[in-house]
Length: 98
Image 1 (tube, rainbow, N blue to C red):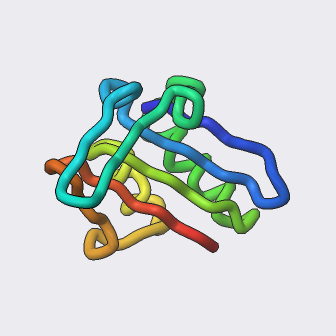
Image 2 (tube, one colour):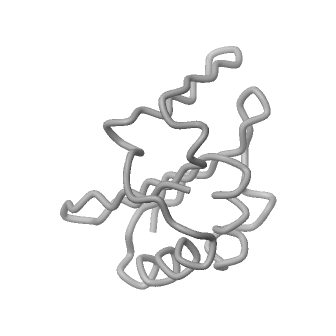
């Protein structure tokens, strides 16, 4: 998985499954564009991603999470529930604003 932390007045944590980087998915009026300029970051293991999510959650960061592995990490970290995961063309994603 790739993790990119964008420093701003409120940190933005972009997490995606590595194989989705650079792809775009559309369904009806909705589009999921996994742009390298936003999502490309450091390759991390599941345990590293879970730790980052837990740490950044404490700092009131916002999260953009795309992909099966990435959304599963967010569930395991207690950031989201399975019910909050949406899909576009079968690709799971979640956006969390703290």
